[in-house]
Length: 413
Ligand code: SF4
Image (cartoon, rainbow, N blue to C red; front, top):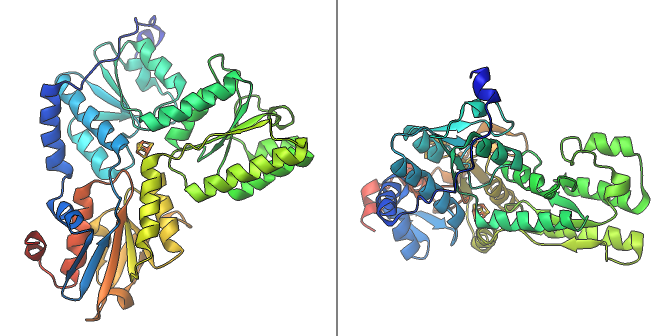
């Protein structure tokens, strides 16, 4: 990176480019199908999500895998390559949280830029470069930087994420602090937090993740407390200049779109009650449920599937995928649940490598008693919104093959 490029004057803002041309999308649909489609998954769906061969049954949740927002983001990324075959194409972070999908984009020459902070790489962008904004969106200062460089922008931000932005911007306009249920360092929540500052940049937000965080804040709302301790506890989760004595007077709740719905509702309820206890009225409280439809459908479908007796549950998806993590949390409460990246994690009938959410690391567990032997076995499978069907197919095939069922028997379904 040269100093000259870093200090160059901002380029004129380019109009957003439309890469969804019919001729392009036809080719994109074919390419995406080759990479991520699964005929076996489609056949299973046609059979109501259940297949039994010999003494092995696989159950698929009624809703799983790619959501509309993810499908759109991937389509637009592929389309960018078609529309700009010779240009450098960059992506802010990852398009979605799935290593397989991100690998495919790298193979197409789409390069990830850092998303946690603006690095000198952004100063090197030129007017001929194309920047893809991921499905989570990107913070406002990233967007400003890209616009300053004059690059083409292909924005794949999901409409459901933008709905949350509209809400927190309104909160800021009304002088209401956004209480955001989410992970402060998640791409989507960082993008949302930046919008909670409002058009003038003087809005405020506080990100809470757990019920314990919520109770701490509720206690402060009711009784006040040690401001310095509060700010230490929520370091990195508040707007600049946040003062709990001033900025918890009028609050509005929003959430990262992929949180666990039941927890989000409980958090909303607790904040509502705290404000009502303090003021004797709830006029200083607003709420807007921003869990997206796709996340909710996948959680509801898993609850429904859990009504059927299963021996174990496999949840397939990227380990950093928030909505997938919540599916794991739901499953763990009912039966042995393994969070796997793909079929390669199932090493053998008595070893599975999986992500332990509680210790935040990949571990290897024996599960011999669950799958070994000739007794009938039922395996449930679901996947987060960022998981392609080909990875689900490979998981189904692996389970059956370890139980002695050949791939060809599944093809014949
Ligand atoms: S999980 Fe929801 S918010 Fe995220 S991309 Fe999919 S539909 Fe959009």
